[in-house]
Length: 173
Image (cartoon, rainbow, N blue to C red; front, top):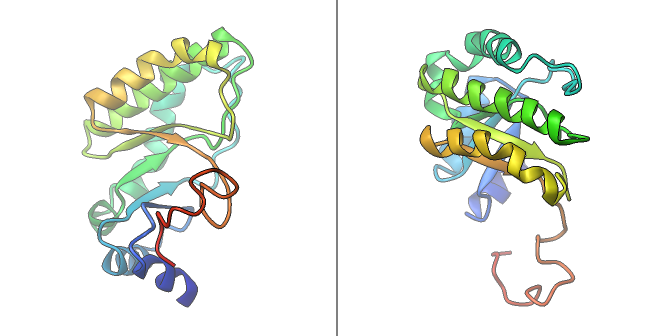
């Protein structure tokens, strides 16, 4: 944990995503790095079955499951947003439309309770460009309700490793 706080102290960490709901830990993270966005994710959530999902019912069920955790006063004060499915993969336009409807409804429902959403949370290289249009309703909801689009991109020691920006000292340390 000391390494986490040392890293946070650099000011270079824009977001931390956690499956840990401990309000004390969340408060410590926000104290160490008040500008870092703290994002929560339910660890018990199974992967989305986009081929048969009822997006509206699934969004309501998600919100019902999340609110006892995210609705806690100490978590409201420290968590900046909440993710639903981790790295969902839509195989076609219909599946992407269902995911988009789910994310849009989840975003609306949570916003009505004062909770911010992080939508998408797509894995590296996902989704294919031809599916983004079907995701537009979710993007519109995120804009309307002050949410964020989550994209997972990885590299080390920085996102610019092995690119032309690698030596431009963008990050401290």
